[in-house]
Amino acid sequence: MTRSERWLMVLLRVVGTAGILAIVAVFMLRAWIDWCHRAAGFGPFPEGPVPEYLARCTSMFYVVAGVVQWWFSLDVRRFGRPIVALGIFMLIGGMVLLWIDIQSGMPPWWTVLEGPFSVALGAVYLVLQFRSRVEIYCRPPEEASAAPSDEPGEDEAQGPSAAEPDAAGSDSEARPFTQPGAPEEGDRR
Image (tube, rainbow, N blue to C red; front, side, top):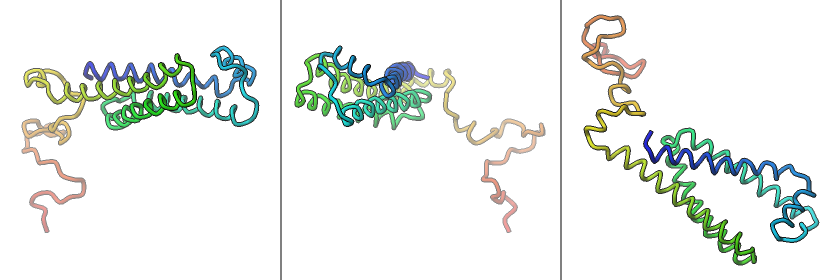
């Protein structure tokens, strides 16, 4: 695992954990929602089913986003493309959130934190993902041959090499890898 991949894994887990913590807001009592609303400086929480529905659904969205980020963190190399997509969505979504916050008259502290933070986080995801690709594919030859690879190489993917004896221990000539059920050389009918 490269240094950029480690940082990306840690960042995905930290942000994912923060999102998962929103599970509390999905199930909290309405009186607690009202208290949080007042503590944030928004006054009493509006009455009616729609505001409560939106507050709980938004919290559930953060939980799902947190779980997805944790999932991606388990194998940042395998989930490279989805992480790039996540970074792009966060960049674009952060700009949209900034516009929404300005249009809806959110307090300055909220406006400064929400949209720009999402843009910055998306950019960091993209940069770390790009740097990890560079670190993997642009290693100096001596470093690449000395360091063990996380991905199977050609020899590992094709089975034992011609220099190795077969599984039975004989020194017979190694045969090239073939698909199971495919006719081997000399078996053509």
